[in-house]
Image (cartoon, rainbow, N blue to C red):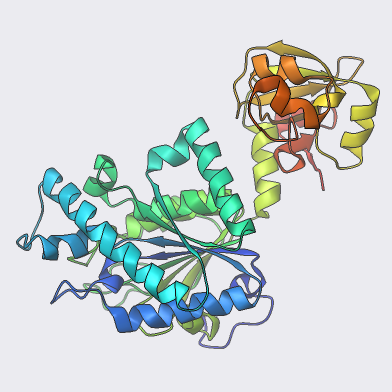
Length: 393
C-alpha cells in the first residue's frame, strides 16, 4: 500500500465494527518479560479514538503466557504443556488488570471473555459467545478476548490466536479485522533471508500462490506466523470482513495504519451480512422445517423477522442454532434461516405471542423464532441449488 493517508472510504474508516488483535511480541518486552505499558497506552488511545467515532471495538489479546512465565521464573525456550497452562493462569490476571486499569480510567467498561477455537466452531458455544458479544457491545462495553490457554491445548501448541481473532470477527459480523504483529505484511518470500522479496499491499483472492508465500514466525515470544495469518484471512474474507496485517511495534499502531503505514489488506467480495446470508442459503443443509401462515409470509417479504405467532407446524428434529427451511402455506420453501429454538420448544410456542414465551418455556428466550439477520428469502429452484438468495433488510 502506498504511503499516503487513508481516505474516508477506507475499510478502517467506514467499518461499523472492528476487531483488533494484538500479538505477544508487542505486549511483552522480549528482554525483560514485562508488559510494554508505554506502548499499550498508545494502543488504548487508538481504540478510544475509534469509539469516539461511534465505531464498535473488540480487542483480541495474546500475552498471558509470556507474562506468566516471567512471574513463575520459567527459563527461556520452549515450555512443556503444563508449564504453558500454568503461565497462562498467572499471566491472565496481570493482563486483564492492565486493560481494566487503562480503559476504565477513560470511562470505558472492560469485559473479559475467554474463548477457545472450540467455542467458535461448536454450534451452541458459538451462539452463546455471539450473543454475549452482541450484548456487551450494545451496552457500550469493550470486550477484551483472550484465549483460554489453561485448557486450550491445541492453541498453545500451534499458536492459533490469529485464527481465533478471525473467528471472533466472523461471529461478531465485524467489518474489519486488524492483526497487529511483529511483521508489516505479506511478502513474496521471507524478507529476512531474501533481499529480493516484494511486498504485497492488497490481496483480492487467496490463491495457492499466496498461501505458499507464508513463512514461519520470527518471534521468540509469539507462537503464530504468517501461515496462521493467511488462515485467518481466509476465514475473515469468507465472512465479508476486510483483514489487515501490519507492524504494531510503533506507538499508536492503529492510527499509523490510517495514516498510510505499510500494511497488507485482504479484500472480501461481500459485506458481512451478505456473506452470512449466502452461507445460510447455499452451504447449510436444513435440519427441519417451519410451516407459516399468510400473515407471517407477508411479514417476511417486508423484511421482518419470523415470530412464533406466524408458525402453524414444525417438521423434523432440530436444535437451537440449526438451519431450517421456512415453508409457505402451499408447501414451497420461501426462506431459510438459523432457528433460535429446538423443535420441541418451537412446537410449544408456535402460534403464540412472543410475550408468552417465558411463561410457556420457563425461561426468557429470543422474541423471534428466526431473526431477520439470520434469515434469507429463497427465490426459485436456483436459490436452493446454487445458494443465490435475496438479502432481507
